[in-house]
Image (cartoon, rainbow, N blue to C red):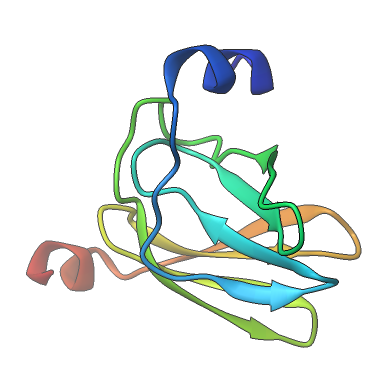
Length: 106
């Protein structure tokens, strides 16, 4: 995956369904592309953090909601097949696979 350059050139605005606040920033999974971002609350400037590596760059609405638990952002899936957890301090992304029957039912 190409990093931030591709996002800056291909998209003018990011949109999201849910965000959490930590360290003076809003953290969110973009709904119109594959990526976790944070936006400075004072300046409004967004910064690309990482992508969800099992999906292509153009994947949309992977995650619909998120919540902050002990400085970890938990992302609830929309089109993704797992729950994803981003550790703000360790800068690590982990996943919890969902049972195949649960994914098919959704």
